[in-house]
Image (cartoon, rainbow, N blue to C red; front, side, top):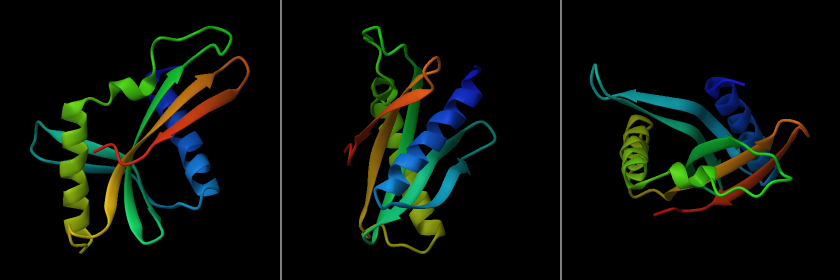
Length: 128
């Protein structure tokens, strides 16, 4: 499975997970072009209890019978967190929300076992 399909599969699993927990998905794959050479993306933007959630999804393939030392959530580094924060503030501005509105950045980690057609999902809330 190529990376694009795997990413889409992870985002679909994350959306189902979030919706079952009361989140309303309001946008997917928000892209902001900062310049001709630089752009950023937020995977999922959701709402719950009046707050806005900007969610980064990281997905990896995993055989659940084997121990893994690679966790998808570890790919969200300081630089990525800052990028998501800038994109979130841009989205809030574009949609007439105050940056003082209640919002946060979350990470959803999805490990997919393709053989068993199962996924393990972990939700890391308010990563700042």
